[in-house]
Length: 408
Image 1 (tube, rainbow, N blue to C red):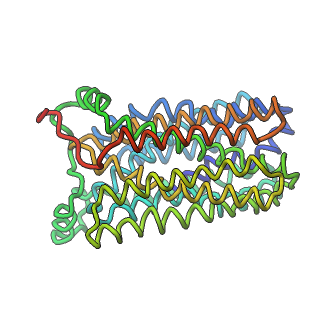
Image 2: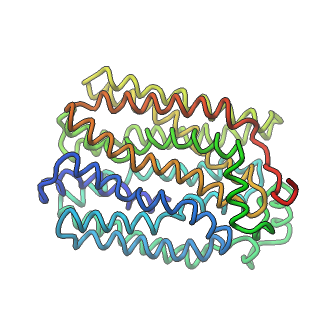
Image 3: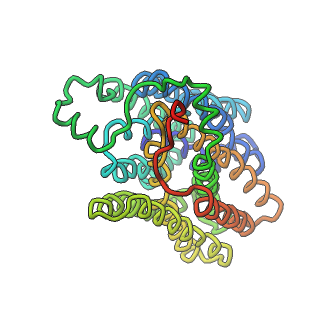
């Protein structure tokens, strides 16, 4: 996920240079930021079905190879259309990433270790901004924006080789001892294999389930604010706070560092610690989920200041709350799914989440272009978060397994 997100954030870092070279408007940049999510979001549900059919190993290999190639294409783009097309291809290639991780952690970790294992891969998405933004900014400013994309493409090819060599599902891993296998299964690991119900029936069954809709709406609300900052934070600091590209890159690492820590400590370690002490598993996860989203409403504070220090403080608080909630959201598919349904639930949830990746950058670009201010864009994000909180409270219900379709 760390390398995966380098390929997502490189455009936001190199955006000002690319915008200047190609003579693009703010609205054009909003479309480029959202282009990745058009294909990424639309393929989430099909990807979930494919993952449940063919498994993490095969799909992960193909996806990681293709996303490295898609990033490389941007280095030879000659204008708006070329960058747009390459970002759409990148969305296709990276579509399996998060659902595959959710499925893999379900296979490999018992329930009492699921929060931290999920938080580790989810936190990597945040930490990519801590090290990726300044490194890509340095490469782009020193050698040009095309080299910034070339650098991240090279990292992606190296990751593909690492995944090819090291990752296997538990049943395919010859180095997994029987004692470890028994420990994982006894702790409630997600069963490997396909559902007896078939992919089509499973999809229809899950789409009719209230828990799936509660999870989906809530996670989409989280996604709106997350992707707003993922794509526009460097541009916000350059445009509103009048910083240079390198200075904005340095400042933008602060909220993401706070987010990384909150993700690992609260969304990961604390949940597993409290569950291990005997507290109700569903209540612990749901409390962190809702409280984290409430803290995310600190985004309203950023609408009331033009001071960069205060703006970074409010954004850091908001992203920390959202990041504490995020691994809970990503652990839920493996916790509630019937056999063979984890990838499908992850795909449904991530489809809605990443539709916000389409909407948030484009809406933000339009609003900022019309008002010359990010205040109203942050206000919209706060309202969307409030809707997500209500969905988690009143629709999701208890975090417990959904009955298998054959038993309903």
